[in-house]
Image 1 (cartoon, rainbow, N blue to C red):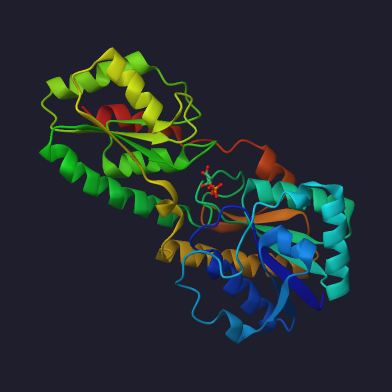
Image 2: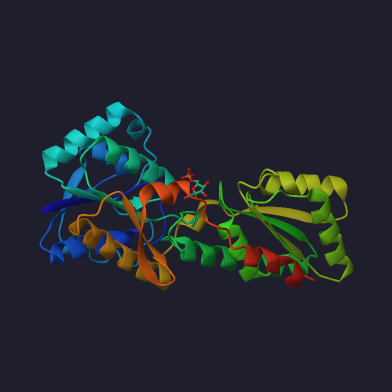
Length: 323
Ligand code: F6P
């Protein structure tokens, strides 16, 4: 292998730059040329490429976002788009791809890999931490710390006013971020897509908390919770019990920005390096991840189709710790 391409795709996450840097520097170290592909799969289709060298990735380790930029590319969902992308890849002499992204990106990569002779390795980059085959995805730790920092601040004002806050965090299909931030910030409850929300039970617990002289209550709601996000659940709760002084905060895209934590930088550096080494060892159609501190390769199909177990031991902590 003489030349590889690297791209970031889907929702960005803090640490993607660190993963690009690691990919590029590992490849250069191994005397392989690297092409940076702008705007994810869209750039692959358009041939929006740039030659990268070791100095092209200087000063990006500590920067949030992705300097290669990212898209959720609709054209890549079509055979026509993927064929066009393959033509561009061949024209540029790219012999392997490192794809940094989440489940949507890996689904696209999997189909592309089945249709064409193009080795690729996935690097998990999403704040959602919802990929099977890795304990952590790049960006999750930073986003978690961003959420906890925000909740700490909200708790100050909530306690001053005896208020109930519903705080919505990202997680369209998964409650990893909600659950982890709920534990780390001492929330009274956490509502996640993986669990059915019982509004009556929630109200009962919140009334109990009030009775137990709590001067505020925090409920973390994953955006994909079945009750329909923080706004809707707040309305439902107030309908059942109108005496709460309720406020809703939607944290939004602030969770995706900011400089990556040290953990995310280390994770990204390890995974970018492993992705290049995997390609050099003739591997393809896999995701590199971290399991129990060790690098682990998982078939890309499994990473998107197998269910990552939610940490139920965390879920079980919520009730006892919020008495
Ligand atoms: O990156 C994944 C994610 O954070 C989801 O949890 C969320 O639903 C989605 O991105 C929203 O991203 P966008 O606004 O870019 O579509």
